[in-house]
Length: 384
Ligand SMILES: Nc1ncnc2c1ncn2[C@@H]1O[C@H](COP(=O)(O)OP(=O)(O)O)[C@@H](O)[C@H]1O
Ligand SMILES: [Mg+2]
Image 1: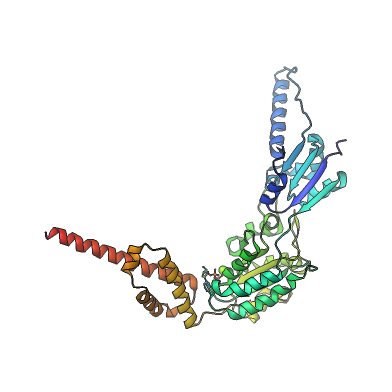
Image 2: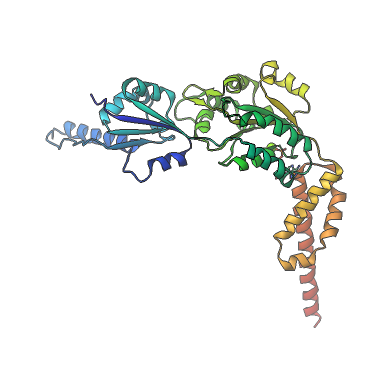
């Protein structure tokens, strides 16, 4: 009974799923479940109060029922394990599911004819490589060898027969362009960069995040399903507890991420892990041979040279001046500011710190000038 429900399962980002739905009439699974529970409560009340003649809940057959990626979290665990029962009870003509847990998909597959639609993720093409090569220096000062090694590492992704991801480890000091490189490349491909900071998770929460927990908990797998980007960035890989390393073997080998609830085929995507390791040797010792050998390339980011630091300062000061008012610009001598910063900056090549330094120096000069002005004019008026 009810097995004529037409099921379509969509895997991809929420915005894409919304597009697929278009303007069509729909009812949301969660709303229907709430209404059903509400109706049951009413019936129970009338039974208790001996007023059995209350209206029967008239249920017309829903035309199109939709469940979003985040909805399964609010559905009871038993409804998920018996999802087929639920669908039969609601008996919609069309059921459209967005990024459902694997268990739901396999159950439905056995009983209904289910169709699967997948989002097409942006892929690296020859054109991407050219734009990466030509645009690199606009985004990053120095790191020339990174540019060359990246081009080589990305090349296999241009083969449309490839079905596995390319997995890269960026390593080197902080603030020299690792995240920026990932963002630049993702900008070329499009989609919002999926970026996960592995240091942010405390180990107990992180276990269910990586290996899967109850449906209501957030998970890496569901975030992967919801992503729209061609690049997956795992920041601060060195800060993750080593017990999680095993979760990545299969992704790196087969391009499939599986946890307790979800199965995510990644295809020929780019996975970038970043870390502050100092050398390949250190990486192998810290991650172990099994994981170390699974990286397609380990790409070293260097500290910036003194000349490169100057170039960064020039760019930062120029950018800063762009947003100042003409009054403010008149107060400052740009070249003098730069010279002063060169002298101050000798101790760091962390661009994040350099940016703070530039902002601070410019603000300080501006505030001094304005306060001195005010002082001068107030002395001027008081002596009048
Ligand atoms: N080599 C570089 N040239 C120009 N800007 C840079 C460079 N390295 C980093 N930056 C800038 O500094 C900030 C921090 O860089 P980020 O890439 O996040 O560093 P990390 O290497 O720690 O990931 C970003 O705003 C980035 O644009
Ligand atoms: Mg970073």
